[in-house]
Image 1 (spheres, rainbow, N blue to C red):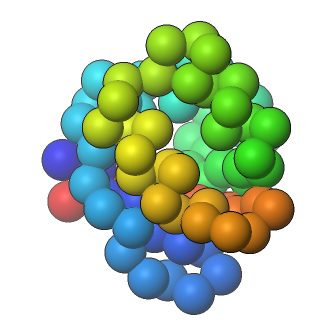
Image 2 (cartoon, one colour):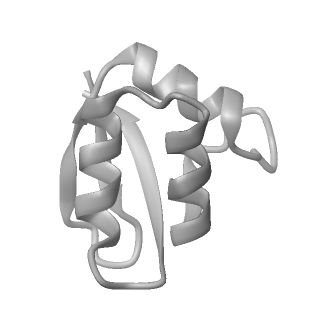
Length: 78
């Protein structure tokens, strides 16, 4: 499994599958090949949803962003 964390606080947001991670990789910009973090805005989360993001991934991202305008997340394999 892959663990997602709030990059600013280090708090664990939850776990996602390899397929969920691949969806993020395919749909979000990476600054380099080994990049393991993403900056998300509400618009980004909406875009991922419109592109057919898995429901479990969407629930996790929507919960992570909460009432904020943006969040930076990072992932690691456990």
